[in-house]
Image (cartoon, rainbow, N blue to C red):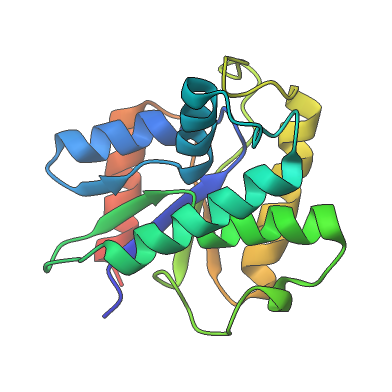
Length: 177
């Protein structure tokens, strides 16, 4: 049984906060590859930043997401990914105009259920790693929802509730299957 759960959706929709709530419950969490790439590029003065070199940024993000997936072991418990391979591939397909299949081999990488954080304007913020505006975040969300559905995943929309309640909702959804 695949124990890898991806939490995706709208930028600034509360994914990282939800992952922190899951980690506090003892679950393994894998931080967002794109944010790690931005942090590393900012620390080293590298050019692979989404506002400078989107393609370079996405190539590094995909490589890191694939590395995360290859190196992570479930060890009997759930492993929660803050975004992942499909997020990076969806962005690459958008930027290059090439289909998702260009980068995917067809196998399911995560549990059948993918959890999406919806656009939530009341909590959306830009920061040093997120320069894009809310409208762009919503467009990204729409692309991701379409991509996961196209790839045969069951999309579960996370409600706009506290991180603790979201964690309970998510875990309850996983345990009922």
